[in-house]
Length: 141
Image 1 (tube, rainbow, N blue to C red):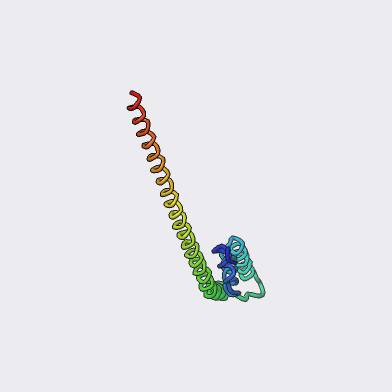
Image 2 (cartoon, rainbow, N blue to C red):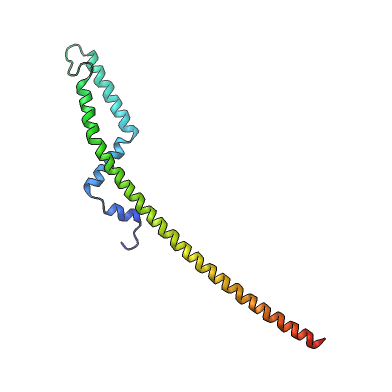
């Protein structure tokens, strides 16, 4: 892939773990996850408060807190892995953008030199023509 974009190159270099952590981070950073987790918590608390016979996690919901602590212990490093990869992607993109800007600047400078050269050539021709006209005008007068 000689003409691959920086994004395509980056995507092709992702490992299974990289893709998995990005998927988990995207899932946990969504409204869908928040809504599902909120529904889960409400059901958990309702069943444990209103359960007449079976209270598997009575108030103050220590098991629920343990579940959330475990979830957070795994979620934080996974999200950080995804953020580190995003920072790497951003650096690669910034470097690519910088190189594009340098190349564009060089092209603009080359065009400016060509335009300046054309202007000088035209002005020289105009001066020569004016001098010829001036000499022709002096001879006829």
